[in-house]
Amino acid sequence: MSLSSDETILSTPLDVERIRQDFPILATHVNGKPLVYLDNAATSQTPKQVVQAIADYYNTSNSNVHRGVHRLSQVATDQYEMARKKVARFLGAPLVCEVIFTSGTTEGINLIAQTYGRQHVGKGDEILVTHMEHHSNIVPWQMLCEEKGATLKVVPVDEKGDIIFEEYEKLLSPRTKLVAAVHVSNALGTVNPVKQMIEAAHAMNIPVLLDGAQSTPHMPINIKDLDVDFFVCSGHKMYGPTGIGVLYGKGKYLEAMPPYKGGGDMILSVSFEKTVFNSLPYKFEAGTPHIEGTIALGATVDYLNAVGMVAIARHEQMLMNYGEEALQAVDGLRFIGQAREKAGVISFVMEHAHPHDIGQILDEHGVAIRAGHHCAQPIMKHFNVPATARASFAMYNTKEEIDALVNALHAVNKVFA
Ligand code: 7TS
Image (cartoon, rainbow, N blue to C red; front, side, top):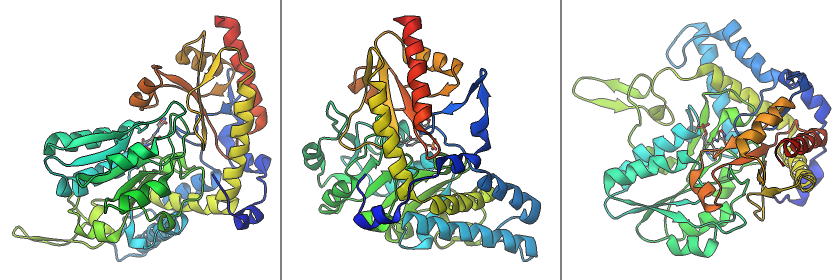
């Protein structure tokens, strides 16, 4: 990512040793070796301040939100709505009521497909995705296209793992009803040129949904600056709890969209003749929400603000450069994905060992990585591999941990080469 000079001045290096004290799980030993946790793209670890926020909620204010006149319910509601304000500020959302809590990225995308999508996509229309999408940004659109007689179009990716921008521009057409693109690829680490993609789509009045599951943990996000129409992310990939995520949508779209789920809290009044839906954001939050997860997501945002997203991005970029250099010392290792701009992820294959075998031997050395297709089978096929091994970084990772990864990969070669 590029940093403005102001951001560069403001950002101080991370005190990683101090940060690691906030993550007790990092002191775990696996097979007698210190844990080296490099599977952060799947789920990142959670600092004790966030865990404490969950415990505090249950110990002091556990109660349902938006419906009680009693003290505990008021406290819980205040905390829940405070989390919404914190998240809105963190993501640079123009309006707090445009922030909707979901169970995660997957639910956010499905919500858009089933509401905006079903409302706007018809026979002969097109949805545009990239070749590097996670399955959760492919399958909901395929289901919608199937139902409506529409077509899923795919922006091609080159041999480095960058989208081919001219092809993207050519694919935008009056039939395109939505661009749904990943901000940062979980399989390759590619940072897509989303600002330019959004500008090109908007020039043709096409709205854009960004899958921010892998960008939110690694870089400052400013929805207003991006001018993106929909943005989704997951708490558990940004040091927060599982089961909570965020959907941002521009008010003009959210207002016009039908609800996704019916039930309590999303209504103003119900009779058997007619139901009047609630205003934003409650229209999209039916039923008792993930209250402690939401409040703890607010605590997560506090934590990330205290550390600083610019400082996190710089630290991880340093790890990425160091890692790409260090891994070249491993015989038979080949990177999958060498895009112009990358964040968080190094994906690779080895000449003599299958990714699953790599993952297993690394585990014996206490090193946790992900091996598989990363729920992104189409891009695996593009690179002609069934799977990759993937090391993914977080703010608490160190150069020494990358050295441990490299040593363990030498051990893989000893077994298989
Ligand atoms: N989009 C991207 C880019 C992702 O990386 C993931 C999860 C999702 C969507 C789905 O997020 P969820 O929180 O709703 O499950 N990616 C991964 C991964 O890379 N390894 O495990 C899950």
